[in-house]
Amino acid sequence: MSITKESDLVGMKKASEAVAYTLKEMTSYAQPGMTTKELDEFGAKILTEFGAESAPHSTYGFPGWTCISVNDEFCHGIPSAKRKLKEGDLINIDVSAELNGFWADNGGSFVVGQDVNQHQKLVNASKEILIKAINTIRGGVKIADIGHLMESEAKKRGFKVIRNLAGHGIGRGLHEQPDELLNYKNKSDHRRFRKNSVVAIETFISTTSSFATELNDGWTMVGNRGGFMAQHEHTIVVTDKAPLILTEMNGIF
Image (cartoon, rainbow, N blue to C red; front, side, top):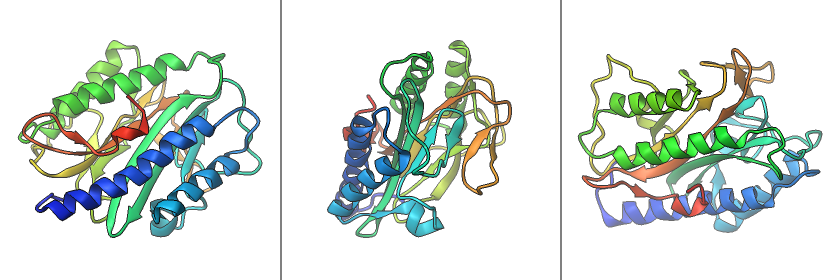
């Protein structure tokens, strides 16, 4: 969507606060021994207190309130009473929701407990790349150039990007134009970021895979060549200066 009046901005800020606070609290709450279903139900309670509706649950019939992916699960992991978190697990939580007709999206990867499996380097790379990308986005900047920046920065750190996952426009719906905000340079994409537009910008940084493939459960995605992936995401408003990060309170940075 494009922010055309103050009420649009207020609505987006409230929806973004709901998802950002939920993600921050879920990240703090996660600990070894807890099931991903317990963690999801904790997040659901917070969203409900805000009066927000889970986007994946209401829009797509996703079997959970939030997406919780663990270790080799790259994204869209289904919360489960059978999946217990362990010390050193790499976990990704993606929280998106609708509140009073406005939609916001954010996500983050982190290590549960001590980093016994050496995932923190990947997590840090994803965060650093998202910061650099967001700080480069302005009205008029080519979308493909941000993708190029993301891939270049990943390669510098010894990582890859996932080529079939992408950021997207957001606002009055979960996925809007501009779609396909890729983590690499699409030379045929001549679009530019537009001032006052709202986008969910996200990283997909991987150790060995370049594509994500869907498992038989119809939701969970893993790498085509295995390995691990870290994702971080903010909902932002594009300006002619530094973007307004609507989900800033999630604590990613």
